[in-house]
Image (cartoon, rainbow, N blue to C red; front, side, top):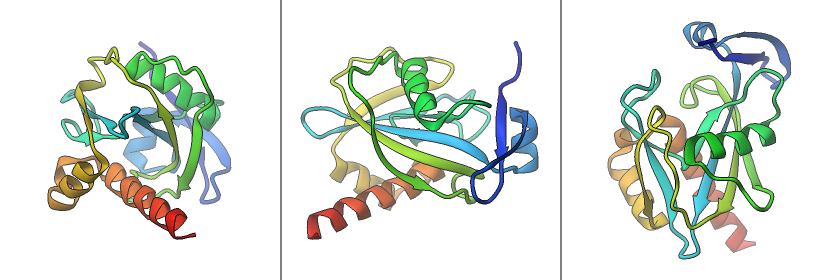
Length: 173
């Protein structure tokens, strides 16, 4: 099976080349990823527990869906693809584009666009990617991530905090 090829980007998220996934990760090169938060009508968020076979941060909880942007692919296109690949979800309306996180150690050198959508499930979880998944209230996720951040992917903790801060700021406006 051919290895995934990712666009390598500079500090301004401009494409400067393309390399194999293993090379990008081994060298800590800047690249791109997406995270999607899937909420249901009760306001709960679906979180996935990453498979133990994942090469990066196996066995921890993460966004509903997350993945790398392939070479030549846009962020929006990648988010739609990842939803289908990981959850079996074909969205019926456009994703809500929330915010972008700059590449840093917590994101594993990834620039990350964060999206949101609504769906009730059930989902068809991709076993090579996801061990299990469940719905949680935002309050439960916040408490859990605060008390046991090591249960979560490092990017998720950063993204969740940013998401909550933006919600709080929007309510104050």
